[in-house]
Length: 567
Image 1 (cartoon, rainbow, N blue to C red):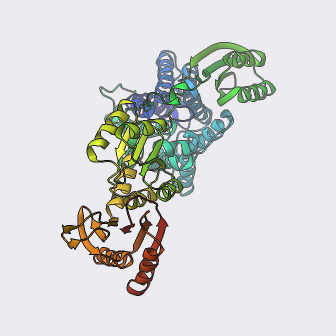
Image 2 (tube, rainbow, N blue to C red; image 1 turned 30 degrees about the vertical axis):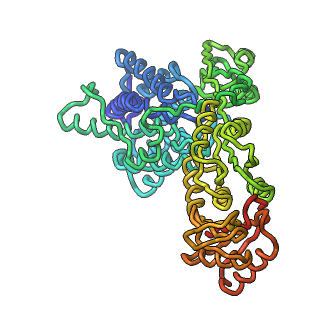
Image 3 (cartoon, rainbow, N blue to C red; image 1 turned 180 degrees about the vertical axis):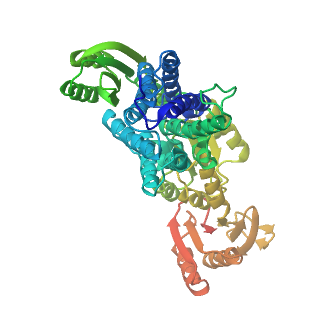
Protein backbone atom coordinates (compact mmCIF):
# COMPACT_ATOMS: atom_id res chain seq x y z
CA UNK A 1 0.00 0.00 0.00
CA UNK A 2 1.40 3.42 -0.90
CA UNK A 3 2.08 6.14 1.62
CA UNK A 4 -0.89 8.40 2.29
CA UNK A 5 1.49 11.23 3.14
CA UNK A 6 4.31 11.30 0.61
CA UNK A 7 5.53 14.66 1.92
CA UNK A 8 6.21 13.35 5.42
CA UNK A 9 6.82 9.67 4.86
CA UNK A 10 8.14 7.12 7.28
CA UNK A 11 10.05 9.69 9.36
CA UNK A 12 6.93 11.63 10.36
CA UNK A 13 5.20 8.39 11.34
CA UNK A 14 8.10 7.57 13.65
CA UNK A 15 7.94 11.08 15.16
CA UNK A 16 4.19 10.75 15.89
CA UNK A 17 4.72 7.34 17.51
CA UNK A 18 7.65 8.61 19.57
CA UNK A 19 5.78 11.81 20.49
CA UNK A 20 2.84 9.86 21.92
CA UNK A 21 5.15 7.68 24.00
CA UNK A 22 7.17 10.58 25.43
CA UNK A 23 4.01 12.62 26.10
CA UNK A 24 2.63 9.69 28.10
CA UNK A 25 5.87 9.47 30.10
CA UNK A 26 5.72 13.20 30.79
CA UNK A 27 2.12 12.96 31.99
CA UNK A 28 3.01 10.00 34.21
CA UNK A 29 5.76 12.05 35.87
CA UNK A 30 3.59 15.15 36.17
CA UNK A 31 0.33 13.52 37.27
CA UNK A 32 0.71 14.34 41.01
CA UNK A 33 1.51 17.96 40.17
CA UNK A 34 -1.34 18.30 37.70
CA UNK A 35 -3.86 16.66 40.03
CA UNK A 36 -2.75 18.91 42.89
CA UNK A 37 -3.62 22.11 40.99
CA UNK A 38 -6.91 20.81 39.57
CA UNK A 39 -9.59 23.20 40.88
CA UNK A 40 -11.50 23.99 37.65
CA UNK A 41 -14.17 23.20 36.53
CA UNK A 42 -14.46 21.16 39.73
CA UNK A 43 -11.82 20.45 42.37
CA UNK A 44 -11.84 16.66 41.91
CA UNK A 45 -8.04 16.47 41.51
CA UNK A 46 -8.12 13.98 38.63
CA UNK A 47 -7.08 15.96 35.54
CA UNK A 48 -3.62 14.41 35.46
CA UNK A 49 -5.03 10.93 36.00
CA UNK A 50 -7.61 11.36 33.22
CA UNK A 51 -5.12 12.74 30.69
CA UNK A 52 -2.69 9.94 31.50
CA UNK A 53 -5.38 7.25 31.15
CA UNK A 54 -6.38 8.74 27.80
CA UNK A 55 -2.80 8.72 26.48
CA UNK A 56 -2.13 5.20 27.74
CA UNK A 57 -5.14 3.98 25.77
CA UNK A 58 -3.59 5.65 22.74
CA UNK A 59 -0.31 3.78 23.31
CA UNK A 60 -2.19 0.48 23.48
CA UNK A 61 -3.75 1.25 20.11
CA UNK A 62 -0.35 2.16 18.65
CA UNK A 63 1.15 -1.07 19.98
CA UNK A 64 -1.53 -3.06 18.15
CA UNK A 65 -1.08 -0.91 15.05
CA UNK A 66 2.65 -1.74 14.90
CA UNK A 67 1.70 -5.33 14.08
CA UNK A 68 -0.48 -4.49 11.09
CA UNK A 69 0.63 -1.14 9.60
CA UNK A 70 0.71 0.65 7.21
CA UNK A 71 3.56 2.74 8.62
CA UNK A 72 2.48 6.21 7.39
CA UNK A 73 1.98 9.44 9.36
CA UNK A 74 -1.74 9.56 8.59
CA UNK A 75 -2.27 5.92 9.60
CA UNK A 76 -0.26 6.27 12.82
CA UNK A 77 -2.13 9.45 13.78
CA UNK A 78 -5.48 7.81 12.99
CA UNK A 79 -4.62 4.77 15.13
CA UNK A 80 -3.58 7.04 17.99
CA UNK A 81 -6.86 8.98 17.67
CA UNK A 82 -8.94 5.80 17.86
CA UNK A 83 -7.03 4.73 20.95
CA UNK A 84 -7.45 8.00 22.84
CA UNK A 85 -11.15 8.04 21.93
CA UNK A 86 -11.47 4.52 23.33
CA UNK A 87 -9.85 5.49 26.61
CA UNK A 88 -10.85 9.14 26.98
CA UNK A 89 -11.57 9.95 30.62
CA UNK A 90 -13.13 13.09 31.99
CA UNK A 91 -13.37 16.56 30.58
CA UNK A 92 -9.62 16.87 30.06
CA UNK A 93 -9.30 13.48 28.36
CA UNK A 94 -12.05 14.25 25.85
CA UNK A 95 -10.46 17.62 25.07
CA UNK A 96 -7.14 15.83 24.52
CA UNK A 97 -8.81 13.62 21.90
CA UNK A 98 -9.59 16.72 19.84
CA UNK A 99 -5.95 17.74 19.96
CA UNK A 100 -4.97 14.42 18.37
CA UNK A 101 -7.95 14.54 16.01
CA UNK A 102 -6.60 17.82 14.62
CA UNK A 103 -3.22 16.22 13.92
CA UNK A 104 -4.84 13.15 12.35
CA UNK A 105 -6.85 15.36 9.99
CA UNK A 106 -3.85 17.55 9.13
CA UNK A 107 -1.48 14.65 8.48
CA UNK A 108 -3.96 13.06 6.10
CA UNK A 109 -2.73 15.36 3.33
CA UNK A 110 0.43 17.13 4.42
CA UNK A 111 3.78 16.68 6.14
CA UNK A 112 4.58 17.39 9.77
CA UNK A 113 6.76 20.39 9.03
CA UNK A 114 6.50 23.87 10.56
CA UNK A 115 3.46 24.85 8.48
CA UNK A 116 1.73 21.51 9.06
CA UNK A 117 2.33 21.78 12.80
CA UNK A 118 0.94 25.32 12.89
CA UNK A 119 -2.16 24.29 10.94
CA UNK A 120 -2.76 21.29 13.20
CA UNK A 121 -2.57 23.49 16.30
CA UNK A 122 -4.98 26.00 14.77
CA UNK A 123 -7.36 23.18 13.85
CA UNK A 124 -7.21 21.83 17.41
CA UNK A 125 -8.27 25.24 18.73
CA UNK A 126 -11.37 25.12 16.52
CA UNK A 127 -12.21 21.52 17.42
CA UNK A 128 -11.90 22.15 21.16
CA UNK A 129 -13.99 25.30 20.87
CA UNK A 130 -16.69 23.30 19.08
CA UNK A 131 -16.49 20.48 21.63
CA UNK A 132 -16.74 22.55 24.81
CA UNK A 133 -20.14 24.08 25.47
CA UNK A 134 -18.68 27.15 27.16
CA UNK A 135 -14.92 27.46 26.44
CA UNK A 136 -13.24 29.65 29.04
CA UNK A 137 -10.10 31.73 29.05
CA UNK A 138 -7.45 30.47 31.42
CA UNK A 139 -7.84 26.83 30.36
CA UNK A 140 -6.16 24.37 27.98
CA UNK A 141 -8.11 26.03 25.16
CA UNK A 142 -6.38 29.39 25.67
CA UNK A 143 -3.00 27.64 25.98
CA UNK A 144 -3.66 25.90 22.66
CA UNK A 145 -4.64 29.19 21.04
CA UNK A 146 -1.47 30.94 22.22
CA UNK A 147 0.62 28.05 20.88
CA UNK A 148 -1.13 28.10 17.50
CA UNK A 149 -0.74 31.86 17.16
CA UNK A 150 2.99 31.65 17.89
CA UNK A 151 3.46 28.80 15.42
CA UNK A 152 1.77 30.78 12.63
CA UNK A 153 3.88 33.85 13.45
CA UNK A 154 7.05 31.78 13.02
CA UNK A 155 5.85 30.27 9.74
CA UNK A 156 4.99 33.76 8.47
CA UNK A 157 8.54 34.80 9.33
CA UNK A 158 9.89 32.02 7.10
CA UNK A 159 10.31 29.01 9.41
CA UNK A 160 10.03 25.73 7.51
CA UNK A 161 11.59 23.00 9.63
CA UNK A 162 9.53 21.59 12.49
CA UNK A 163 12.48 21.74 14.89
CA UNK A 164 12.78 25.50 14.32
CA UNK A 165 9.35 26.28 15.77
CA UNK A 166 9.02 23.80 18.64
CA UNK A 167 11.07 25.72 21.22
CA UNK A 168 9.33 29.09 20.72
CA UNK A 169 5.89 27.45 20.58
CA UNK A 170 6.53 25.58 23.83
CA UNK A 171 7.71 28.81 25.43
CA UNK A 172 4.48 30.50 24.30
CA UNK A 173 2.57 27.66 25.96
CA UNK A 174 4.59 28.14 29.16
CA UNK A 175 3.67 31.82 29.26
CA UNK A 176 0.03 31.03 28.50
CA UNK A 177 -0.10 28.54 31.38
CA UNK A 178 1.50 31.10 33.70
CA UNK A 179 -1.19 33.63 32.70
CA UNK A 180 -4.12 31.34 33.49
CA UNK A 181 -4.59 32.65 37.07
CA UNK A 182 -4.99 36.15 35.62
CA UNK A 183 -7.75 34.90 33.31
CA UNK A 184 -9.70 32.61 35.63
CA UNK A 185 -10.56 33.97 39.11
CA UNK A 186 -10.94 30.51 40.67
CA UNK A 187 -7.29 29.80 39.83
CA UNK A 188 -6.13 33.11 41.26
CA UNK A 189 -8.04 32.44 44.47
CA UNK A 190 -6.43 28.99 44.80
CA UNK A 191 -3.01 30.39 43.73
CA UNK A 192 -2.50 27.74 41.05
CA UNK A 193 -2.28 27.48 37.27
CA UNK A 194 -4.77 25.57 35.15
CA UNK A 195 -4.33 21.80 35.44
CA UNK A 196 -5.47 21.07 31.87
CA UNK A 197 -3.09 23.69 30.51
CA UNK A 198 -0.27 22.17 32.54
CA UNK A 199 -1.03 18.73 31.10
CA UNK A 200 -1.15 20.11 27.58
CA UNK A 201 2.26 21.72 28.16
CA UNK A 202 3.64 18.23 28.89
CA UNK A 203 2.29 17.02 25.54
CA UNK A 204 3.56 20.00 23.54
CA UNK A 205 7.02 19.87 25.07
CA UNK A 206 7.30 16.13 24.40
CA UNK A 207 7.35 16.73 20.63
CA UNK A 208 10.62 18.65 20.88
CA UNK A 209 12.26 15.67 22.55
CA UNK A 210 10.72 13.28 20.04
CA UNK A 211 12.26 15.26 17.18
CA UNK A 212 15.63 15.51 18.95
CA UNK A 213 15.61 11.78 19.66
CA UNK A 214 14.92 11.11 16.00
CA UNK A 215 17.83 13.30 14.95
CA UNK A 216 20.18 11.40 17.26
CA UNK A 217 18.93 8.06 15.94
CA UNK A 218 19.39 9.11 12.33
CA UNK A 219 22.91 10.26 13.13
CA UNK A 220 23.58 6.80 14.55
CA UNK A 221 22.06 5.09 11.51
CA UNK A 222 18.75 4.11 13.13
CA UNK A 223 15.25 4.72 11.80
CA UNK A 224 12.89 2.53 13.82
CA UNK A 225 11.53 3.78 17.15
CA UNK A 226 13.33 2.36 20.17
CA UNK A 227 12.05 2.21 23.72
CA UNK A 228 14.18 4.20 26.14
CA UNK A 229 15.37 2.78 29.41
CA UNK A 230 14.23 5.73 31.49
CA UNK A 231 11.68 8.49 31.25
CA UNK A 232 12.85 12.05 30.62
CA UNK A 233 13.05 14.67 33.29
CA UNK A 234 9.87 16.68 33.32
CA UNK A 235 10.20 20.10 31.71
CA UNK A 236 8.80 22.80 33.95
CA UNK A 237 10.36 26.27 33.77
CA UNK A 238 11.19 27.77 37.20
CA UNK A 239 8.80 30.67 36.59
CA UNK A 240 5.94 28.27 36.01
CA UNK A 241 6.79 26.23 39.08
CA UNK A 242 6.86 29.42 41.11
CA UNK A 243 3.39 30.39 39.92
CA UNK A 244 1.95 26.97 40.77
CA UNK A 245 4.09 26.39 43.88
CA UNK A 246 1.34 26.66 46.55
CA UNK A 247 -0.16 23.39 45.38
CA UNK A 248 2.58 21.58 43.46
CA UNK A 249 3.80 19.78 46.55
CA UNK A 250 0.81 17.51 46.29
CA UNK A 251 -0.58 18.47 49.68
CA UNK A 252 -4.11 19.73 49.59
CA UNK A 253 -5.33 22.13 52.25
CA UNK A 254 -7.72 20.52 54.69
CA UNK A 255 -10.85 22.46 55.60
CA UNK A 256 -10.63 24.12 58.97
CA UNK A 257 -12.42 22.24 61.70
CA UNK A 258 -15.46 24.16 62.92
CA UNK A 259 -15.53 25.24 66.51
CA UNK A 260 -17.63 23.02 68.76
CA UNK A 261 -21.07 24.46 69.20
CA UNK A 262 -20.87 26.59 66.06
CA UNK A 263 -23.52 26.43 63.38
CA UNK A 264 -20.94 25.09 60.90
CA UNK A 265 -22.07 21.58 61.89
CA UNK A 266 -25.65 22.30 60.88
CA UNK A 267 -25.36 22.77 57.09
CA UNK A 268 -27.69 20.74 54.91
CA UNK A 269 -25.76 18.10 52.93
CA UNK A 270 -25.05 19.21 49.37
CA UNK A 271 -26.81 17.40 46.55
CA UNK A 272 -24.64 14.63 45.08
CA UNK A 273 -23.28 15.47 41.62
CA UNK A 274 -21.98 13.01 39.07
CA UNK A 275 -19.57 12.95 36.16
CA UNK A 276 -21.44 11.29 33.29
CA UNK A 277 -19.56 10.10 30.19
CA UNK A 278 -21.38 8.64 27.20
CA UNK A 279 -20.15 7.11 23.96
CA UNK A 280 -22.66 7.36 21.12
CA UNK A 281 -23.01 6.38 17.47
CA UNK A 282 -25.32 7.49 14.66
CA UNK A 283 -25.77 11.17 15.56
CA UNK A 284 -26.57 13.71 12.89
CA UNK A 285 -25.96 17.45 13.33
CA UNK A 286 -29.48 18.13 14.58
CA UNK A 287 -29.28 15.37 17.20
CA UNK A 288 -25.84 16.59 18.27
CA UNK A 289 -27.12 20.14 18.79
CA UNK A 290 -30.13 18.85 20.74
CA UNK A 291 -27.92 16.68 22.97
CA UNK A 292 -25.60 19.60 23.68
CA UNK A 293 -28.56 21.79 24.65
CA UNK A 294 -30.07 19.15 26.95
CA UNK A 295 -26.78 18.39 28.72
CA UNK A 296 -26.08 22.10 29.16
CA UNK A 297 -29.50 22.48 30.80
CA UNK A 298 -28.74 19.54 33.12
CA UNK A 299 -25.33 20.62 34.38
CA UNK A 300 -21.96 22.10 33.51
CA UNK A 301 -18.53 21.11 32.17
CA UNK A 302 -20.27 19.93 28.98
CA UNK A 303 -17.96 18.55 26.28
CA UNK A 304 -19.00 16.71 23.10
CA UNK A 305 -16.21 15.48 20.85
CA UNK A 306 -15.50 12.67 18.44
CA UNK A 307 -14.03 11.69 15.10
CA UNK A 308 -17.06 12.14 12.85
CA UNK A 309 -18.31 8.60 13.45
CA UNK A 310 -18.55 8.17 17.19
CA UNK A 311 -19.03 10.78 19.88
CA UNK A 312 -17.87 11.15 23.48
CA UNK A 313 -20.17 13.27 25.67
CA UNK A 314 -19.27 14.57 29.13
CA UNK A 315 -21.27 16.48 31.76
CA UNK A 316 -21.22 17.20 35.49
CA UNK A 317 -24.79 16.95 36.77
CA UNK A 318 -26.92 16.05 39.76
CA UNK A 319 -29.29 14.04 37.51
CA UNK A 320 -27.22 11.26 35.95
CA UNK A 321 -30.35 9.42 34.78
CA UNK A 322 -31.58 12.40 32.80
CA UNK A 323 -28.15 12.75 31.16
CA UNK A 324 -28.15 9.10 30.09
CA UNK A 325 -31.73 9.42 28.83
CA UNK A 326 -30.74 12.46 26.77
CA UNK A 327 -28.02 10.37 25.15
CA UNK A 328 -30.37 7.47 24.41
CA UNK A 329 -32.87 9.80 22.78
CA UNK A 330 -30.15 11.48 20.70
CA UNK A 331 -28.45 8.40 19.23
CA UNK A 332 -27.17 4.90 19.92
CA UNK A 333 -25.42 4.79 23.31
CA UNK A 334 -22.71 2.12 23.33
CA UNK A 335 -20.98 2.96 26.62
CA UNK A 336 -21.87 4.77 29.84
CA UNK A 337 -19.59 5.75 32.70
CA UNK A 338 -20.92 7.48 35.84
CA UNK A 339 -18.65 8.65 38.66
CA UNK A 340 -19.64 10.47 41.82
CA UNK A 341 -17.96 13.85 42.07
CA UNK A 342 -16.45 14.87 45.42
CA UNK A 343 -19.05 16.40 47.70
CA UNK A 344 -18.30 20.06 48.43
CA UNK A 345 -17.57 20.36 52.12
CA UNK A 346 -19.25 23.30 53.86
CA UNK A 347 -16.60 25.70 55.01
CA UNK A 348 -17.33 27.33 58.34
CA UNK A 349 -16.98 31.07 58.41
CA UNK A 350 -13.93 31.93 60.47
CA UNK A 351 -15.74 34.60 62.49
CA UNK A 352 -13.84 36.93 64.75
CA UNK A 353 -15.33 39.26 67.36
CA UNK A 354 -13.89 41.98 69.56
CA UNK A 355 -15.08 42.20 73.16
CA UNK A 356 -14.24 45.34 75.11
CA UNK A 357 -14.53 45.74 78.87
CA UNK A 358 -15.89 49.23 79.46
CA UNK A 359 -16.47 51.10 82.72
CA UNK A 360 -18.71 54.05 81.89
CA UNK A 361 -21.63 54.56 79.53
CA UNK A 362 -19.74 56.96 77.28
CA UNK A 363 -16.78 54.60 76.88
CA UNK A 364 -19.14 51.69 76.18
CA UNK A 365 -20.85 53.72 73.45
CA UNK A 366 -17.50 54.57 71.85
CA UNK A 367 -16.54 50.89 71.62
CA UNK A 368 -19.94 49.90 70.24
CA UNK A 369 -19.70 52.61 67.60
CA UNK A 370 -16.29 51.19 66.62
CA UNK A 371 -17.79 47.73 66.08
CA UNK A 372 -16.88 46.00 69.34
CA UNK A 373 -19.10 44.02 71.67
CA UNK A 374 -19.12 45.47 75.18
CA UNK A 375 -19.09 43.95 78.64
CA UNK A 376 -19.92 46.51 81.31
CA UNK A 377 -16.94 46.51 83.66
CA UNK A 378 -18.68 47.39 86.90
CA UNK A 379 -18.28 45.87 90.33
CA UNK A 380 -19.78 42.56 89.13
CA UNK A 381 -17.21 41.88 86.40
CA UNK A 382 -15.19 38.69 86.95
CA UNK A 383 -13.31 35.99 85.07
CA UNK A 384 -16.45 33.86 84.95
CA UNK A 385 -18.59 36.72 83.63
CA UNK A 386 -15.99 37.58 80.98
CA UNK A 387 -15.78 33.94 79.84
CA UNK A 388 -19.57 33.72 79.66
CA UNK A 389 -19.82 36.91 77.59
CA UNK A 390 -17.08 35.79 75.18
CA UNK A 391 -18.70 32.38 74.66
CA UNK A 392 -22.15 33.88 74.07
CA UNK A 393 -20.84 35.84 71.09
CA UNK A 394 -20.79 32.64 69.00
CA UNK A 395 -17.59 33.67 67.21
CA UNK A 396 -14.82 31.17 66.59
CA UNK A 397 -12.26 33.59 67.97
CA UNK A 398 -12.59 36.52 70.35
CA UNK A 399 -10.19 39.42 70.73
CA UNK A 400 -10.57 40.84 74.25
CA UNK A 401 -9.71 44.44 75.11
CA UNK A 402 -9.35 44.34 78.94
CA UNK A 403 -8.87 48.12 79.23
CA UNK A 404 -7.53 47.73 82.77
CA UNK A 405 -10.81 46.36 84.14
CA UNK A 406 -9.43 42.97 85.27
CA UNK A 407 -6.08 41.96 86.70
CA UNK A 408 -3.78 39.49 84.94
CA UNK A 409 -4.67 36.39 87.03
CA UNK A 410 -8.36 36.98 86.35
CA UNK A 411 -7.70 37.24 82.61
CA UNK A 412 -5.80 33.94 82.68
CA UNK A 413 -8.71 32.21 84.41
CA UNK A 414 -11.13 33.69 81.88
CA UNK A 415 -8.96 32.47 78.98
CA UNK A 416 -9.02 28.91 80.32
CA UNK A 417 -12.82 28.94 80.52
CA UNK A 418 -13.21 30.41 77.03
CA UNK A 419 -10.90 27.83 75.44
CA UNK A 420 -12.62 25.02 77.31
CA UNK A 421 -15.84 26.13 75.60
CA UNK A 422 -14.22 25.63 72.19
CA UNK A 423 -13.48 29.26 71.39
CA UNK A 424 -10.19 30.86 70.53
CA UNK A 425 -9.27 33.92 72.57
CA UNK A 426 -6.56 36.57 72.37
CA UNK A 427 -6.07 39.29 74.98
CA UNK A 428 -4.79 42.56 73.59
CA UNK A 429 -2.34 44.51 75.80
CA UNK A 430 -4.73 47.37 76.58
CA UNK A 431 -4.30 48.71 80.10
CA UNK A 432 -6.75 51.58 79.61
CA UNK A 433 -9.77 52.54 77.49
CA UNK A 434 -7.71 54.97 75.39
CA UNK A 435 -5.38 52.12 74.43
CA UNK A 436 -8.40 49.94 73.65
CA UNK A 437 -9.85 52.65 71.41
CA UNK A 438 -6.53 52.94 69.57
CA UNK A 439 -6.57 49.17 69.01
CA UNK A 440 -10.17 48.91 67.78
CA UNK A 441 -9.55 51.80 65.38
CA UNK A 442 -7.18 49.62 63.31
CA UNK A 443 -9.08 46.32 63.66
CA UNK A 444 -9.50 44.59 60.29
CA UNK A 445 -11.52 41.33 60.33
CA UNK A 446 -10.40 40.67 56.76
CA UNK A 447 -6.79 40.22 57.88
CA UNK A 448 -5.36 36.95 59.13
CA UNK A 449 -5.91 36.71 62.88
CA UNK A 450 -2.22 36.96 63.70
CA UNK A 451 -1.74 40.01 61.49
CA UNK A 452 -4.83 41.69 62.94
CA UNK A 453 -3.66 41.00 66.48
CA UNK A 454 -0.21 42.44 65.77
CA UNK A 455 -1.64 45.59 64.19
CA UNK A 456 -4.03 46.18 67.08
CA UNK A 457 -1.40 45.47 69.73
CA UNK A 458 1.02 47.87 68.03
CA UNK A 459 -1.61 50.61 68.00
CA UNK A 460 -2.36 50.03 71.69
CA UNK A 461 1.32 50.11 72.59
CA UNK A 462 1.74 53.36 70.68
CA UNK A 463 -0.93 55.10 72.77
CA UNK A 464 0.63 56.57 75.92
CA UNK A 465 -1.91 57.29 78.63
CA UNK A 466 -2.37 58.90 82.02
CA UNK A 467 -5.25 59.73 84.31
CA UNK A 468 -6.29 62.45 86.72
CA UNK A 469 -7.81 61.20 89.98
CA UNK A 470 -8.72 62.73 93.35
CA UNK A 471 -6.69 61.93 96.47
CA UNK A 472 -8.76 60.30 99.21
CA UNK A 473 -6.42 61.20 102.03
CA UNK A 474 -3.23 63.02 102.89
CA UNK A 475 -0.16 61.17 101.62
CA UNK A 476 3.37 61.51 100.32
CA UNK A 477 3.94 60.78 96.60
CA UNK A 478 6.84 60.92 94.16
CA UNK A 479 5.51 64.32 93.10
CA UNK A 480 5.24 65.65 96.66
CA UNK A 481 2.77 65.75 99.51
CA UNK A 482 -0.93 65.70 98.70
CA UNK A 483 -4.00 66.49 100.77
CA UNK A 484 -7.40 64.86 100.57
CA UNK A 485 -9.26 66.34 97.59
CA UNK A 486 -6.13 67.23 95.61
CA UNK A 487 -5.86 66.16 91.98
CA UNK A 488 -3.20 63.57 91.23
CA UNK A 489 -1.77 62.98 87.78
CA UNK A 490 -0.95 59.28 87.44
CA UNK A 491 1.13 57.63 84.71
CA UNK A 492 1.13 53.86 85.07
CA UNK A 493 1.22 53.35 88.82
CA UNK A 494 3.19 56.49 89.67
CA UNK A 495 1.93 59.92 90.70
CA UNK A 496 3.67 62.53 88.52
CA UNK A 497 1.89 65.73 89.63
CA UNK A 498 -0.17 67.10 92.50
CA UNK A 499 -2.47 70.12 92.20
CA UNK A 500 -5.35 71.57 94.16
CA UNK A 501 -6.86 72.96 90.92
CA UNK A 502 -8.48 70.43 88.57
CA UNK A 503 -8.23 72.66 85.49
CA UNK A 504 -4.55 73.43 86.11
CA UNK A 505 -3.86 69.75 86.83
CA UNK A 506 -5.41 68.79 83.48
CA UNK A 507 -3.26 71.30 81.59
CA UNK A 508 -0.08 70.22 83.37
CA UNK A 509 -0.83 66.55 82.70
CA UNK A 510 -1.15 67.28 78.96
CA UNK A 511 2.21 69.10 78.99
CA UNK A 512 3.89 66.14 80.66
CA UNK A 513 2.39 63.69 78.16
CA UNK A 514 3.40 65.79 75.15
CA UNK A 515 6.96 66.31 76.37
CA UNK A 516 8.03 63.27 74.33
CA UNK A 517 5.93 64.20 71.29
CA UNK A 518 2.53 63.32 69.90
CA UNK A 519 0.05 64.19 67.16
CA UNK A 520 -3.31 63.35 68.74
CA UNK A 521 -4.59 63.87 72.28
CA UNK A 522 -7.72 62.00 73.36
CA UNK A 523 -9.48 63.03 76.57
CA UNK A 524 -12.11 60.85 78.24
CA UNK A 525 -14.00 62.85 80.86
CA UNK A 526 -14.81 60.79 83.95
CA UNK A 527 -17.54 61.09 86.54
CA UNK A 528 -15.36 63.40 88.67
CA UNK A 529 -14.65 65.78 85.79
CA UNK A 530 -16.59 68.85 84.72
CA UNK A 531 -16.62 71.55 82.07
CA UNK A 532 -14.05 73.66 83.89
CA UNK A 533 -11.50 70.90 83.40
CA UNK A 534 -12.23 70.26 79.72
CA UNK A 535 -12.57 73.95 78.85
CA UNK A 536 -9.25 74.64 80.54
CA UNK A 537 -7.56 71.80 78.65
CA UNK A 538 -8.98 72.96 75.31
CA UNK A 539 -7.80 76.53 75.87
CA UNK A 540 -4.38 75.35 77.05
CA UNK A 541 -3.96 73.14 73.96
CA UNK A 542 -4.94 76.03 71.69
CA UNK A 543 -2.28 78.28 73.18
CA UNK A 544 0.57 75.88 73.97
CA UNK A 545 0.12 73.08 71.41
CA UNK A 546 -1.74 74.60 68.44
CA UNK A 547 -0.57 72.01 65.89
CA UNK A 548 -1.78 68.99 67.84
CA UNK A 549 -5.29 67.58 67.43
CA UNK A 550 -7.47 67.30 70.54
CA UNK A 551 -10.64 65.21 70.85
CA UNK A 552 -12.79 65.14 73.98
CA UNK A 553 -15.38 62.46 74.83
CA UNK A 554 -17.70 62.04 77.77
CA UNK A 555 -16.44 58.70 79.04
CA UNK A 556 -18.34 58.47 82.30
CA UNK A 557 -15.68 56.26 83.89
CA UNK A 558 -15.94 56.15 87.70
CA UNK A 559 -13.32 57.50 90.11
CA UNK A 560 -11.54 59.61 87.47
CA UNK A 561 -11.50 63.27 86.54
CA UNK A 562 -10.11 62.62 83.06
CA UNK A 563 -8.11 60.03 81.20
CA UNK A 564 -5.64 61.32 78.62
CA UNK A 565 -4.21 59.39 75.68
CA UNK A 566 -1.45 60.57 73.34
CA UNK A 567 -0.65 59.00 69.97
